[in-house]
Amino acid sequence: MSEILLKAENVSLGFGGVKALSDVSFDIVKGEIRAIIGPNGAGKSSMLNCINGFYQPSAGRIVYKGVERNAMRPHAAAAGGIARTFQNIALFKGMSTLDNIMTGRLLKMKRGFFWQCLHWGPARAEEIAHREFVERIIDFLEIQAIRKTPVGRLPYGLQKRVELGRALAAEPELLLLDEPMAGMNLEEKEDMCRFILDVNEEFGTTIALIEHDMGVVMDISDRVVVLEYGRKIADGTPDAVKADKRVIDAYLGVAHE
Image (cartoon, rainbow, N blue to C red; front, side):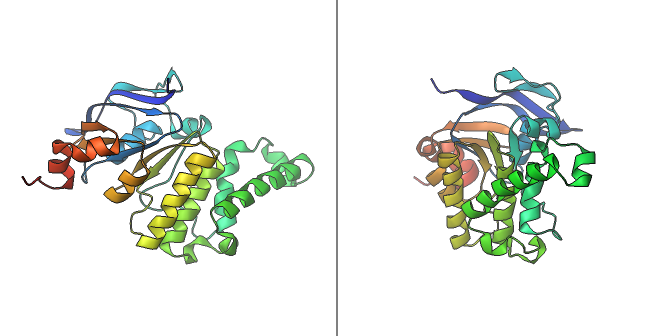
């Protein structure tokens, strides 16, 4: 049987009188690529924010690795193996590619502030080990040429790749990608698709992604959950979802007989 890594059960989220999510249930199986799709305002990003602890559901529950979470915060989610990228790039623009990706290793650093200030002995050895790990990510993402370049000078597509690298530096069990290909041209999308598939296959990382490009979703996803106005309207394989009339009407355009 497939191992369920995360399960959302009857999750609801409201902001005043506005319902962002209403009674949404789905699961994420370990090792899969799980897509979350729907029109703008469907509640997709709100769902990711509930998963990584930025929002707390007003009803329902989220079970991660068999344990029901109670008011988990983003830092606790990160420590538990959940990393994410953002719809709007959230990098340190004045820092280099290498240093941005190094920030993803902060939770892995065990030496205290005193040792880090001295930058000697065990602290120095630890930083060297972390830098070696980050260099492997840089090689994996094929961004060696920009490793020392401030990310604010990079084109949009490369900034997205750096943000993916920072998330990978945390060695996540569950990687949340919020529109990783938004604003990219065709070549950049093809590269990002390849990296997402490689992360899933080579690292064994479970991935949940939000994406509007239906061609990408159908090509790389194992299963798809569809939201509309905060409610789940479909859940299944890409082929099953693509043929669902509710999805066609709500997201792909009204079906024509």
